[in-house]
Length: 135
Image (cartoon, rainbow, N blue to C red):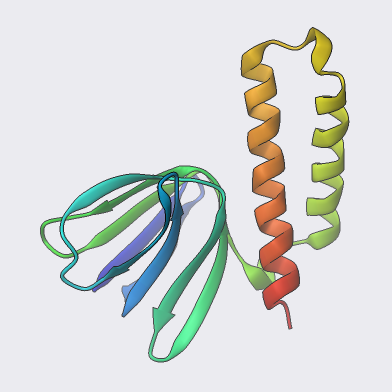
């Protein structure tokens, strides 16, 4: 099945794959070849790309996925990183900064609170994938 994942930095991955497991707002889903066309919102978490018996783990943040009627799976994500590219110390520092900001929520607008929560979720996904799959 043709698969493409795009971030604001460009195409991160493009190849034919067997299946892709994606974290969505409705829960984790696995898309196989000939899956029914659909669109879904991606949430921060682990994505797994299966190709030739190997698994490529990615940490993704928010975005959208589309299984097209042509059989192509297309993902647009705000961020996506391979496990080997994750800087764990930087991710942990970013998470700590966001948690510190969250403690000051008394004077915070709802939109700022949501933005900080999203940042924490993104960093937790990066840390999880980085620690789990790093060699």
